[in-house]
Image (cartoon, rainbow, N blue to C red; front, side):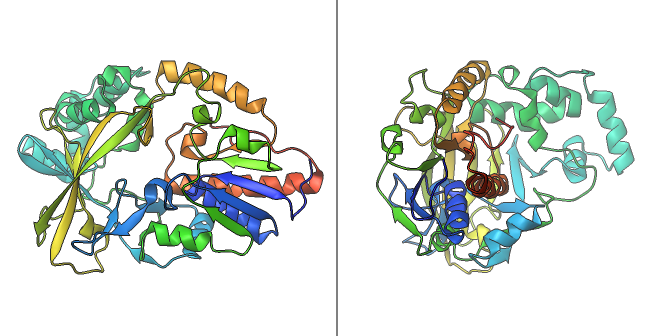
Length: 386
């Protein structure tokens, strides 16, 4: 159905995905209403000044914008000033601290050697377990790095983060953590990396500041509301749209313990705690996410990972065998539902970095505009990745 520019388009969710679609359609002349169940925009990227220290805090855990996609970088840079920020992570394991991702310095420190890049590669080759087709996280790790690196940095942390044995996790999870044979300590290797000067919430607020966009906070959107709109973009959990009729997809959620200190407490933005007997997964010191600011005191969050319950905020889709089977059934339901397009991390039940969410939302908006020209329906999913 062709939608007139004065007709109603609804977007459920005011995170990066929903805000990007809203802005692109608003600039094309469409009137858009964005519904957000929380009392703020930006979803889990929400940032706010801590009242006690004045530090800009990432309320739902740290988010660093990084990408190789120039169009995405140019788009988000329209709505904020990005300051230079280069993310680094420190691992705390066995009473020692190491650089992450695993680099030449980490390898030399762990093995108490002074390897050159070639020597480090040769040494690890003698430790790795040959496996042509790793079937799970542990097999992938042992094939890539061997027993000692895996046991030191990944086994305990993975058990805490995912709440299960690493042999029950897919091998693909480990591809986010490369091995490096140089002394590069940057966590990300993308061309564009930075932090919005005024925080992510201000960025999204500016993105949604358009005369054709109405934002409705503290209002949950549901499938029963969808029938009142010409088209709906759903960025919430796909199973929630269908009122969990096939069951609930599995997610991990995070609990945060806020602690205060004087000066610089841990000397870095993120410290991972790799040992299984330490109950938290990491500690984040938020003043380090804004190195252009100066603060006398500090605020830190300890993070604890656990299975998400019905009333918890979902963070990470689990995507194990049970979830994969259920997801396929929900995808079938979505494809049979007209007038609704699912996108974003929750809407497609995938782990997406922010830049990928923005890219897919940009593409979805463009495909929507093309369907209006051609008078053809927009599919339930505009990406094949689901």
